Length: 246
Image 1 (cartoon, rainbow, N blue to C red):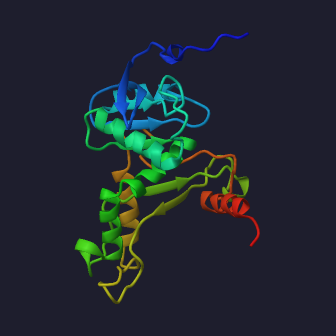
Image 2: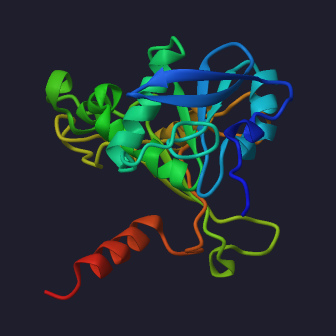
Image 3: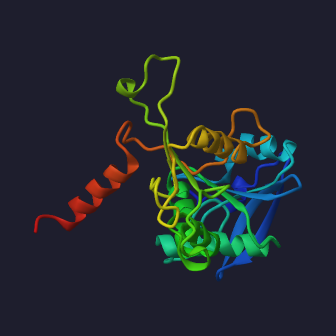
């Protein structure tokens, strides 16, 4: 009979500190390094905090306080029998941020962790609502749609040879929340064809999301075996398969 593995086996020594925080009715393990604005790293399946060991030190050296947490059911965090739905997992992360003494954080997710990170603006929408009010000219921005200076950015980097000119390049699909093109009615949209406006806005987005680590941009993303399939299409196919024929 093989003995059970003690969770302390994942508390690996290094240039980081291990701590446990109470959040959302459970106890979570966090590997933490650095000082500065908080960045929380969410691992994928079936991993734990260790997959972020290189980013922990790199981001800490760049001036961030970095926390790589073990999600519910993984590593040294609690493993309750329930609570593995996306809303609960997103609430776990939000509660960990508060338990770390911060009102907000930059959330970075990989694989399954990315889906949790994507869900957080919807489930905890304080900033996200303001962004969409700006884009659509609603709420406090009624009748005044505008391009958000620091919008939410989604990136999909498909590993598909048909989508890149050669092996020296990558193909990126970038989605940004932005107002629609309505050149003759500033109360309904903005004029993206105005001289230099679109290019200037694209440059601003890259600069706003550039990190002190060369080549690293602060965007949401996910690695997925779907390859060149857009994540939205892949998700739709999964849902359709679950629903079945009408």
